[in-house]
Image 1 (cartoon, rainbow, N blue to C red):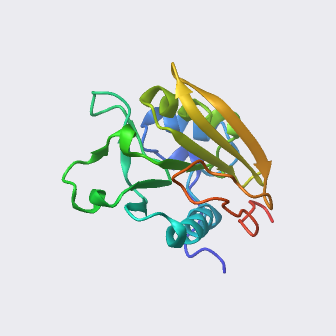
Image 2 (image 1 turned 60 degrees about the horizontal axis):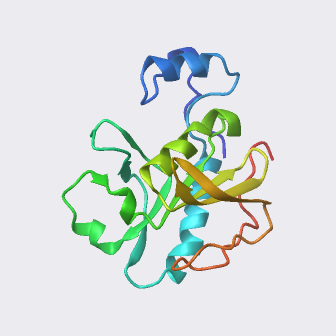
Length: 183
């Protein structure tokens, strides 16, 4: 289905990070906005993981994780697996200790290299498990065991391979039929 509105031009876009986002978007030939395939990837992952989550955990979108004691230092993953008590929480930032899994889907306008800085931020905050999905390449990376601001373990795979998530998360997680940009 064709889009109902034209893509914004990079020079017109102002991302959440302010003028820095505009400058990096202008340097890229890709529009900075999230695409349907980005949202579709998040939706498919959520649909696959939600019915098999253990009691007490649930998937959440648009939930920001505190990265330090500074309320301006946070990251908002595409999907986060959190305790169901988050439903009733009045806070706007989740403690990284409460995050069972954070999922980042690399946007069409990003490259794994340009988005890789977030991995260190998650590790420094103590988010135990980070899954990075790259629909541009049809690849994924699972990061675990943060220590001193660096993930100690990394497992890479391609779409079609199962992701073995650590306990208490359900495993394995299928990656077949996830959308690929440009296909």
